[in-house]
Image (cartoon, rainbow, N blue to C red; front, side):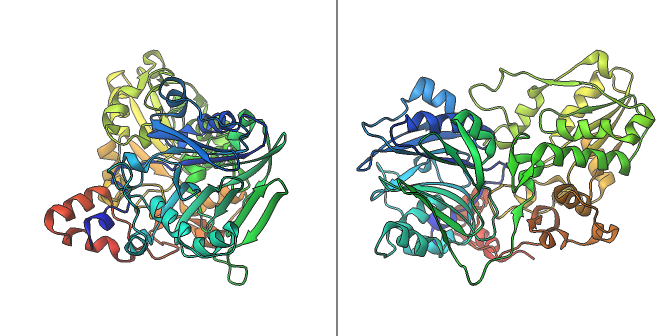
Length: 510
């Protein structure tokens, strides 16, 4: 396998997804509407932002490094065309490729913006190798998909897209466009979310419903798994990718745990109530006498509110207090989510949180967070200890992460604390806490479906699949075979070593 193919994968650093938006609204400032959506979805990607605008005959594209509001305030103008009718936008965190892979990408009159990861990208690249752009060759799975779609035969653009998308494997929620038609498509497993909204004079697509208010849109419905929609002057036309053999649902449950904004409705479920239910479960599961319960902001807040509101916490007299604060201005240029920064995540975690010393000094603390990935909480625990915390009981609103994601959330196996230290006692010592408790597989799914599940499901890794979710990062039960997903660090090492180091990443996980 060549060096180019080996670069088609995810980095070892854990990162988040991308965000995609689309606008079809002739006569409106579609680029500005797309920018509004990108700003609301910057929690999904902070490395670059881009917008493509079309007027029925041509595209104008602008993109740059950084978060959307900074890119289009200081570095780039929002693209505009006389008679503009549609726009495609993208917030990127990279699973593969370099600066020339910043999206949207355009080739031969087709624009693409992609959220997810294609597991057969390495194989497709042998047939559809992207051409060089200004002396640099795109390496991402998105660039490969664009070449495939542009070289697929069909009488109409819709026919070509339907035929081409059927060759893609893995996770994808895509917004695409020709100069006069907007398209949205979601993979048959439904790994990644994509929603449709109605706006004055047209339609919008977005990764999350949280984008709609600022875009001036109202929620219409989800794009269904295995559905392609075409949007033009006639409205929205729906097509099925594989109507006779639907794939089993495998919606990424980590979208609910961390990725999506609390005010989003993802996979038909409001995120905030889901997270509160996980907090209630933690309170019932592991009651402990403490002076207060506090959140790791901001992604741990909803679960902490649920914890504090539970009968157990009220009975123990454990109230919610703010013991950790974040500076709302510190991440203005580079993005607020340290989880999805491409580099320097540990250093960012050290400076991100400030301790409210009078709240924690001399007190027993329950601290709630959404997940433990690499173990950066040890820096927070050290700060709490230095500020006089007497004890720290860490409660995590998801099960231990033990398996790398193949579908767009970039956990590398070797980076995961629970993969390195399977015993919870060892992880607690590494994190510097007095106790560590996670919700179980059953409890997480129960919070998602909001109904009681039998206790035996605690030990059943198939509980996710039975309810239409992918929980492979918790169970290592992957809903598809994985091929071609090579982390960047492994790929670079393989290239230096002549290629052998990457071979094991081509095998389906066990």
